[in-house]
Amino acid sequence: MSTDEALTFWDGFYASRTEAVDPRPNARLTETVTGLPPGDALDLGCGEGGDSLWLARNGWRVTAVDVSGVAVERLARLARTGGLEGAVTAERHDLRATFPGGTFDLVSAHYLHTPLDLDRSAVLRSAAHALRPGGRLLVVDHGSTAPWSWNQDPDIHYPTPQEVAAGIGLDPASWTVERTDVLRRTATGPGGQTAEVVDHLLLVRRTA
Image (tube, rainbow, N blue to C red; front, side, top):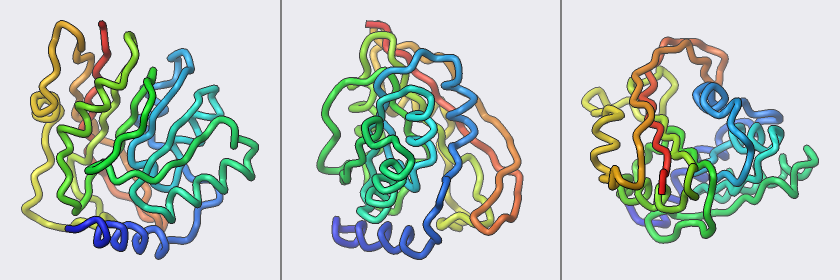
């Protein structure tokens, strides 16, 4: 899939959804980050912005990126109207070509699944290298297919947290894997429907 095709896909995906007034943060983010001292965060694949806005409301300075200009513009508008413009910087990035600059205390990659030809391991490796010492990389992936998912391929393989960690290939002298969890929860879809889903959670801390 070319860059133009990717932009068309994701812009169309978000444009087809009613613009969220107060998008919800992901449950695994709030569970994991609550209690951490706020600092600088990077939200990879920010989508509608629920995670970025929650982080900003809890004292974090957030760089939020997505390949979709529609998603980025919506998040920037929500940050302005919510009085969080100074705490949220929304940027469009095709992570196959560009990665946001800076260093961070937290990098969050929630459900970074895409039909793009994306080298996820390379992106997550860049994210780990963008951490400051003591910073954490939180990767939360789908472990099952929700009824409302854009991808209903019955043969899709969802990598385990251990497989994701192995693919990133970080030096254990400088990064420590803190969690590799398979978790179940009841999720609510965009139309209000509910279903039990599986999340794969990987948490890595930079030690040096």
